[in-house]
Length: 627
Image (cartoon, rainbow, N blue to C red; front, side, top):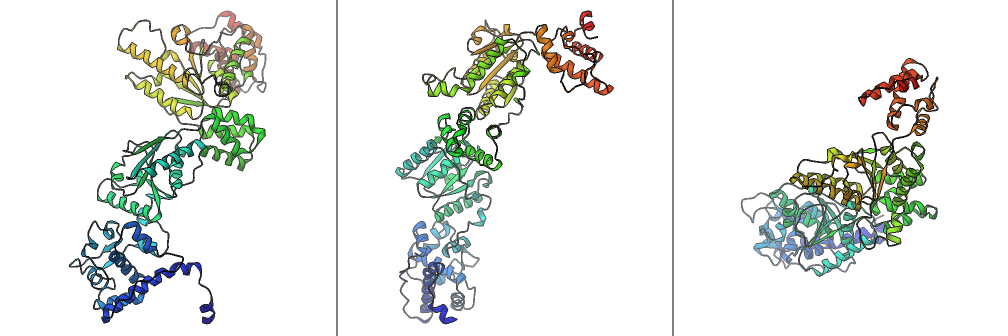
């Protein structure tokens, strides 16, 4: 068996270890020569295709010949029992780890400043000094991460667990890749250490751009969680040096993920030729780039490349113009779509869920389920609402492909004012439009958004629009009377700022890429100057008798049992559609409790309750119509 083993060719792993074995044999020879007073051996010449890791470490950290030998000396006692026994014998049976005094006496080209605090051995924590009475008598111990590096084991320093990770792969759009290439080219020409800051609305892509910068420079990525860094002090300095060392050992670019955290002190302690900061932080940077979500034209190409389905061309156009999704989000949606095997409708649903945002305190999301059949309006009003949907659906084609939006970005958003009495269908129409377009509907309570503090209203509106941009949702600003009003003369500072708030709202509505709708019960309260800035104004009329009869027929569900109920007679109630819906629902509950079909007396009871809400009373003719 031994002969067979001796005759076989060494494996790749064994060939990789041969240079280190030769270096340890050299250290052993030096110690033997020191012990018996013979001439020391010559350093090994490595003819192997694998260079020893100690050579790259020497080059990366700037070790002198003696410092290189000290590091090998400390490694040899950990890896070779004969060396450890020989060191122990030379030190009169003491600790098998070599002292600095023994290293100075036995190793060639010695110098005392090898263990200076700012020297490479201690600055990079390559060597640890164990306790001893004097510097020369203190045993030396090699750092475990460095020992692993010398033996070819790629293991992250365990002291960085939870602080550093390798990162994830993030798909990028072509325009975003160009940003990475431009940054990498600029960094190459910057000889001093550089800090690159990458922020922007595409949160996934800004991390991907940082990775692409490193890859373009033929470097790996070492991702640092800023939130996991210790507070300022010696511990932060120690962690920064470990991260610096790890980036050098791996040939990696530190990518610091921040979330409005202050990392300037950490960056000051980080010794790396390049560091990239990703996130929203006011950091001192050499270079700064913001990464935007791909424009609709580029998004179309991303969708087409990911789906590989020509039959979805119309759906792709719709997804690209409605949803502001980056390459990573598009890739995730397509993967989930492929796993579930859904159709175009499920693809739209996945996009809505991916782009959906939380607007707690400022907006309420409404699941749009109403259809055109739920609206009872004059034909001209229905045509106008369909015109609004048409403007939203084809805005990309008209503004971008046909270049109607080339000269200005103002007024490109689709804005509308729905006015009319409460219950005439304004909110229902907004729900129908959202359902028709396959978008989320957010109802914003302007009364909660408007603040008495100067500048706070604009801040709330800015937060609202920036968050909603990603989803392209339909925004319904309910009860706009809270903000709008005739401001013919400015009586005080509050009137002046109210005008500014209205102007800011209209400006954001005009630039919003989706549909923004204002509702008001009193159109007369809206200044004509503001009306001119809205693309559509729809006056919802109070329903006449035939329209009220039609609403009654639709609200009294076909599944519900009816006994003596006549929609034509019910139309005598002079109420809008919203009230009809409430009366029908309340009557249904009363009938359910009684265990009977819905009868006229149930409707009469419900109508009296509804009228009482408005501080009205049924007329004799109305009450008679319900009997």
